[in-house]
Length: 124
Image (tube, helix red, strand yellow):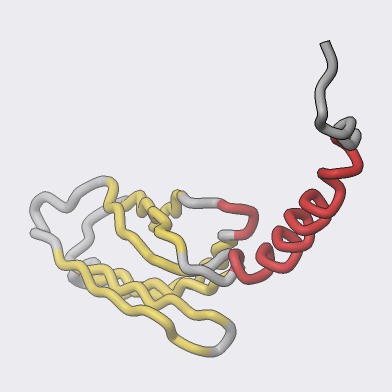
């Protein structure tokens, strides 16, 4: 039994241009993908009485997000979860904790590089 079709070209020779195209597109798109904001969960473990908590996120010297949370002094939660949508990278988080009689300021560096989507920060 014979066929009128010419013999097929070996598969590896056919796939090289496609493989090169796919690798090129991935290499070109990876830096862009890292700049796309992703949702991140930030868990704040609260210690002691807390009446309010102010968070200011910085990318470099630019404030990119600010939020304020208020609590009932008699029963503040032990853990608060907040969300921030930012690209991969390093950020500075400035915290202001109002404990009723005192206000405490602190700064934390948060690294969301490498696809990190969740961090836990102790607020003492």
